[in-house]
Image 1: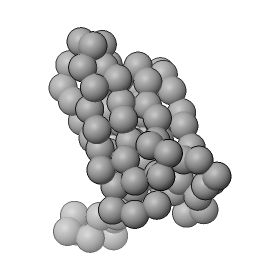
Image 2: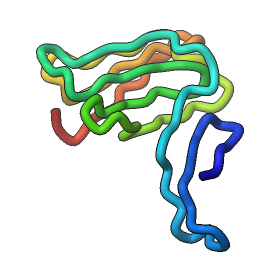
Image 3: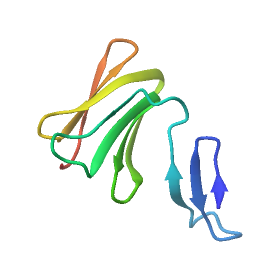
Image 4: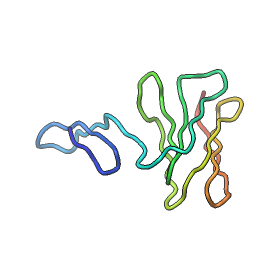
Length: 102
């Protein structure tokens, strides 16, 4: 097992780096918001400095990470149908992330 400075833990066989698998990850700074889609608890989104992440609650792992350098995401919410994530950033801009399915 190998840890990174970006709060990630990887598994790799000794002597080879080509078979690395991420086991765990976390935000590197304070989490500003967490939200679940309407009537659906298998995924949730969280936001922090430089990123928005979508997580699977059953598998307890990160599914998607959207990075925006040198920006802070202050709020995140799913659309009513759960197919999009809308995030608000410290420069007053909004970013809409379209997910494949709910």
